[in-house]
Image (cartoon, rainbow, N blue to C red; front, side):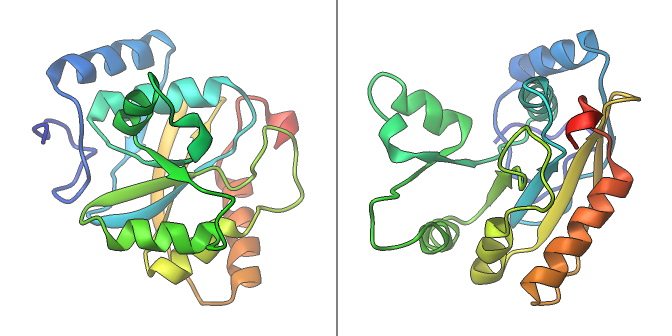
Length: 198
C-alpha cells in the first residue's frame, strides 16, 4: 500500500501507486488548473458516482486527481477488452471485467466482486453518456442495494475547476426516489465542463 501523505485519503481508502505516480498526478492536475476540495469517506467498500459527465476531459481530470492522492478506484469494462497485451494494464488501472453474455446479470456479478474483495471502491458515471439526460440510469443503485454498500457522491465544478468530494447519500431503499433526489442534489451542487450538456 502506498503511504497516505495527504488530507484527502482516509485509513480505509483503497490505495495504489507511489510517490512518483502521486507527483505525476499532481503535476497534471495543477497544470490543468484543477484542485480537490473535501475528503474521502473512511469506508472499505463503497460505490462512488462521479458527476456530471459532459466532456472527454472529465476522465483526464478524474484520473489525475486519483493518481495525485493515490486512490485506487475500480470501474466496469466489457470482458472482451481484457485481451493481451492490455488485460494486465486494465486490471492495474482498476478495470473489472463484466460478462454480458452470462445468464447472471451485471448486478449479480458486481455483488460477487464486492463479496470476494476486502477493500474495493467502484466508480460509476450514472448518466451513462456525455450527452444531456433527463434522469440517471438506476443501475448504480441496484448494485449498491444488492451489495449493501453506501453511495458516495463526487463531482466537478467546471467554473471553479474543483473536484468536490461531498457525502455518502442516505439510501431509503426506494430506488426511484433515491435516484431522483440524488440527481436533484447533483444538478444543484455541480457544474460540468460543458454545462449545456448537463
